[in-house]
Length: 466
Ligand code: G6P
Image (tube, rainbow, N blue to C red):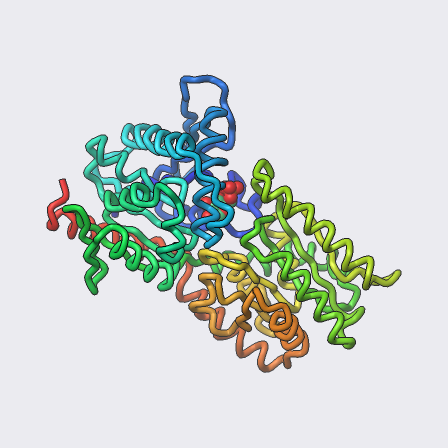
C-alpha cells in the first residue's frame, strides 16, 4: 500500500476530543489513524518572520509538518480568497463574494509554498491527497516542481451550479488548475453533475461516461466519494462510561422535556436564523410542545474576522433573545443558545439525550454532525434526524425527515412530526440510517478514494500526462 501524504489547511486536533462539530480534520484523522503517513498544513499561527520555518511533529501513527502563515498570507490567502471569495461562491452565495486579485495571487503563492515543502517530504512510492478549497492550485504547483506521483484532490464543500461559479472573476484559471490532479473527488452526485456541466461549458472539456475528463491536452478522473464518520468509534464513545457519567449529569438540565439539538460552526451557510424561526413557529402552532420541548443550539464561533460572520453572531443573539423574551416562562427557556466549542464526548452525550437532531444548512458539502447524531443514538430509544435536503448527507440518509431549510412552516411541521413519532417508526428509521453509516464509514471512504486514485493515475499516464 502507498504511504499517504495529506495536505489540508487545518491540521488534525492533537487530542481527538478537542474537536467539536464534525469537520474535515476529525474525518481525515480518523482515516489516517490506521494507515499512517505525513500530514502537512497550517499550524494556526500567524508568524511575523519572513522566512517560514516548518515544525515537524511525530504523532503516532503519522508525521505532521506544520507551517505558519505570515500576516499577509493569512489576510490574503485564508481570510481573503479562501473565505471571502471561494467559500461563499462554492455555497451558492455569489452575492457575498469579495474578490481581490491580490488575494488570489497570495492564494496561489501559499499553494506553491506548501507544495515546495511537500515535495521535499514526499517519498517515491507515496500518494498525495490534497483536501478542500484552500488548495485548488496545489496539483498544478506540484507538477511544476516535477512531482509525478499520484496526486488526488477531494472537495469537502459543495460544487455550485456552473453559472454561479462563473461569478468569480478568476474561475477559469482556478478550476482549470484541477486538471493537474489525477483524481478529483466530490461529496455528492449533485456536485459531480455541477462540475461536469461547468467543465463542459466553461472549459470546453470532454467528459466521458466513465468519469474521465479531457481538457487542454490533459486527462484526469472525477468521482463521488461521500465522506463517512468513524461510525463504530462514535457509537462506542456515546456508550462509553465517560459519556454515561456526563449524560447522568446533563439529564437534569432536560427536566423531563424533549430536547431538539443543533450543533454547527457559526456560519451563514448553516441556516441558523431560519432554524430559530422554525422552532418559534413550532411553539406558536403546537401548544402541546409549549414548555415540553426546547431547542439547544451550540454554535462554535468561526472566522470572526470576517464581517458577515460577526454580523450573523449579532443577529442570532438578537433573535434568540427575542424568542425567549416573547415565549419563556419563569421555569422554561425555549432556546438555549451557546457560542462555545464542546468536546466530542460531551456532544455524544448530548446527542443521545436529545429527541431530535436538527441539521438544516442552506447548503453543505456533507455535514458530519448529521451522521454523528445518528451514530450516538441508542437502538432501543433512538432520536429522529431532521435534515436539510441541501446537505450532501441527504443523498443517502433515507431514514431522516428531509426538509427544505427555506420553508419555515415545513421545518416546524417536520419537528412536530419528529417529536411525536412513535417508538416503532423511530427504530425503523434509525436502523436504516445506522446500517448505511456502518456500511459507508470513514475508513471505507479512505480506501475507496485511494484505490481510485491509483487507478486514475495509471489512466492519466496512459492518457499522456508527463
Ligand atoms: C469546513 C471546511 C474545512 C474547514 C472547516 C473549519 O468544514 O470544509 O476545510 O477547516 O470548515 O473552518 P476553518 O476556517 O476554521 O478552518
